[in-house]
Length: 283
Image 1 (cartoon, rainbow, N blue to C red):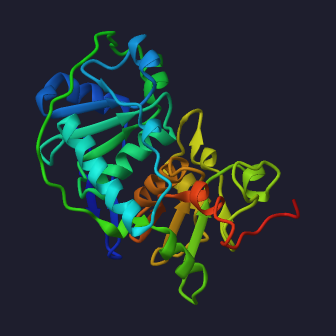
Image 2: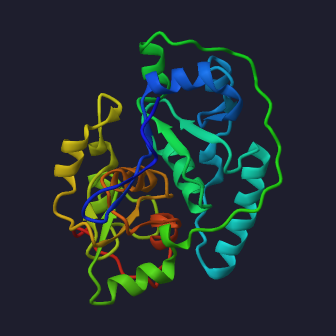
Image 3: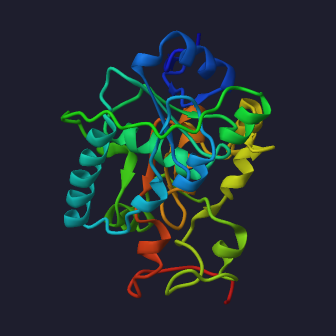
């Protein structure tokens, strides 16, 4: 029905399968709906106009987080655990997040569940727009959440806090920092924080380059896009608020990069701290 979530390949790289096509999801909805949680991450207004059958609505853009101090991460963990229990999520369910396209908000949902050590989770490739193009069923019913009470194990290895980023750019470690924002944000033409520009030595690969016609690029094209990074390298992704960076995180995990972290606070935290170093193109 769908590919295994984890594939062990010959060179000891674990590929985390994070992307699900519409046809496979339709089959899952028909054959095993009781162990499936569909999360529509768009606004409620968009959700109310039509959504996938059985989907609940959670506008994840309302849950951004910019404080990655120790106290900030403690509160983030606490609040996100409450959120996941509100959704009724535990390890026995398959969870699918979707957006209008293969977008950042749904990607943030997948990253979030990976952070809480849940791996039976996917993003719907092409999102709601492609689902409609396929003429698959939709509904307008507002579906209720399935509340739960579950303790989650935190996977610290996929979250970068501000101290980790500072240590990484000031060390001789082999670390690649990817800025998933637009070129104009990266070079400082557009300012959305106290500082213009980007984290020193970061590489700019706009998250939109991960897509073609609102779906993820095929595997070989994605592989070429990130081919300059050796598989064993630590990678830190960031954007403005940790959403576009989550999309890049998913792609890199799909490509078999093991050591990928998403900087949760991203530029909203870094760029608003006047004491932190930045680079720009003279703006």
